[in-house]
Length: 119
Length: 110
Image (cartoon, rainbow over all chains, first blue to last red; front, side, top):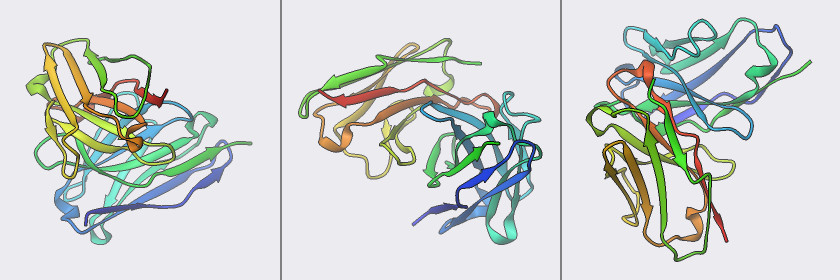
């Protein structure tokens, strides 16, 4: 069974850095696009970007370009989402998703990582 | 960027009733590339429908999707207790940079 297992909840202060992870299993991690989706408290879903682990080809939504960095380590089937300087407005649940091999919809979702940024 | 507008914001229905959810796109959606996701409280979303009308693996046939031009519809023929949730549409076109979600419709128990 395809699984995406994300790292645990984080509580950080404004200005701190953070890297959260998403480990895929039971499918070809290297050859499947992995994306990230943000959900702010009591709000809807926002698409952030995707990465192709085999060659680290990365595509960002214009809203998130320059705000976050998506990376992957194919040797351990893990994708990452990182911030260099967190803001309170980064407080949200972050989901990693696997993109279907034929199109850009998300067929599997991780359980989510809650990031809280507060002074 | 294609903007997706979902309506109504909230739908109050009883178990056994039919639910009709709307998702209107601001422009043509390439190749009918629209998906629907369901999110129950405290859970991650899950894929219901892709390609406008194809059910994802394991999704019951009471869920169906259709389209007319830039208007997309998710229909739940008879609501089961587990169907009370928030539903999001997403257009996924040909480029991952332009993926967008609608604002969601909450289906609540009347």
